[in-house]
Amino acid sequence: MRIRHLAVTAATTVMGLALVLTPATPAAAYSGYGYDNRDPYDTGCASSQVLLKTVDIVTQFGVSVGTGYLWYSRNCGTNWISVRTKYASPSGWAGGITTNIYRDTPSGQALFTWTRPWVAGAVSWSDMLYAPVECVRAVGSVDSDHGEGVGWIHQPGC
Image 1 (cartoon, rainbow, N blue to C red):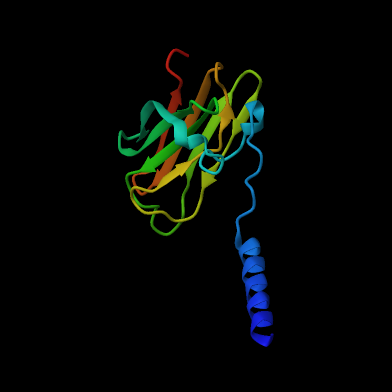
Image 2 (image 1 turned 90 degrees about the horizontal axis):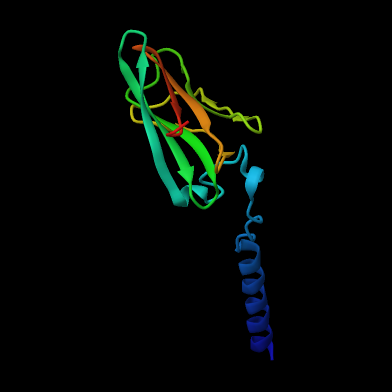
């Protein structure tokens, strides 16, 4: 009797632990403008990403300090920008990598600036804006020891 009781107790404990450790059901999927200002990777929208356009991020002295990428999610109808740096963050201070995206109608924006130190090749991205038909425009900038570079980008045909 005693062995059977221990086995039932152990089984119950393991099942309870498994329930506690099982990840919660993901939140209901967003739709439409509910995607605004949400992370493309956390929502799963990046799984259907399509690269629309790239832009060289250049300083006023003509030095390329990074590349901006405008993305579109086929499944979610959203856009976002990412920036890949060519150099590490400025020596002595963090500088910033800016990834901002704007939608005119209805008015919307997702603004983000990374201000912690980074290595060459680091990637930062904005949150998304829902814009399956509307044009969006975005700006990427990078502060570096070579100066601040800026690049504007928009959907093709806009």
